[in-house]
Image 1 (cartoon, rainbow, N blue to C red):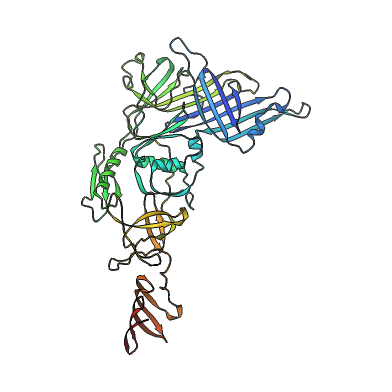
Image 2 (image 1 turned 45 degrees about the vertical axis):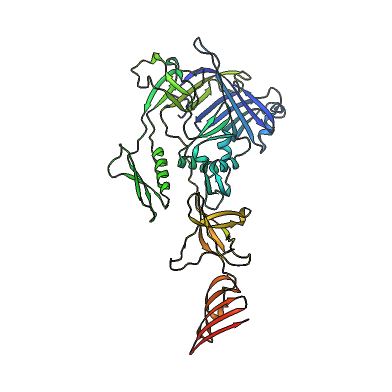
Length: 545
């Protein structure tokens, strides 16, 4: 929906109040000075714009808004609209949206013929958005959460003044690891992008309540409330819109060699032979495949046929997202949409004052506008969620950690395996100093070592962790064990096994006088055994130190 010129536009009179609040002070603007505005209200929030004029009768100091408008304070905005007159069938009721100004401009008009050449006219223009979406765009945290749910993560990242109710099953599940890398180099995604990526991934929806200025995250679309009749007298046209359907066969593949079942298909009767989407997991846990199939089955639901309604007059009761509507009987049964219950998916409004001069209708509480008003309706049975476009966050990102072990003494290089709750898989525990020594679990596996070698990571080994959306893995070891390094002039190599310098076995190969020498040393407190192999000599030694 582009503008008010041409197309399905109409002229109607509206009462309107735009209010800007800056540093606790509110500046109201009446409809007479509000020359144009737009609103695009989606299930998850809204965006809007407004242009309004200021007229001073004598001195530019009468404009008390200007100084506050030009500073760097956060500007809150509310816009209240209603049809100026009801009719015999229905009283006019209003609607209000509240948000944050995201862009502001001002054009000044000076009067050189007036003493002092004062600025007596100003034309202000703003763009605004609901608080949550506007502020989340500026949020780029890098953080690690352990044994937290998505609900807890989202609540921890809410800006002031944003209220979110949670009724989604995926949001309650505790995760051993959740990470945010929105501030790392190369990432352009904001927390808003992350939020909608997660909701798309987990098949949930964000819903904004304009009346209460609050949000809900839900596992199913809102379904409460009675359907309101859409009146024939208010409608200019109704267009049937048939969304595109998925034509691919869908499967979930499990790449784990330990998995008994490697593939499960998801039925799609509309699939075209040869087209497919394969979702890939890698897990030895059988239930993980079943869970992913359940999720992808829900995500694969298509949108049902929609309706686009264009109005011939501003409806006495504004129709907003999630409200239910039906066509009143006067439409007749021949209309395709008749007899169906719809849900408002989005509301779009463009209005421009018929008289746009700064002094025209100045100070009036209502104004006559040329309006383009459109609704997009979805069937009440349509369960597929709608999300805005988003940029997918980037993973993994890397931080350092230290291996934990509770085996042995504090100064011993012991290793320990832990059992992951719920899966019984063996894991390491790794301390991450960046976030106050929070401890994450990491798979206990050989990583880049071949399976012939069993060298678990030892206590306090410094490791590089790759943090992904919901897991961590060791991707590198960053230091040498104490006593492992050898002088460079020996060109030596060494393997240390055991707990500490006084309780270990060392296999060392060095060059002495340019000739190779192999030494195997076993020590336990003051008990020492040494085998030395050098040119022409094999030496065995055992003694107490």
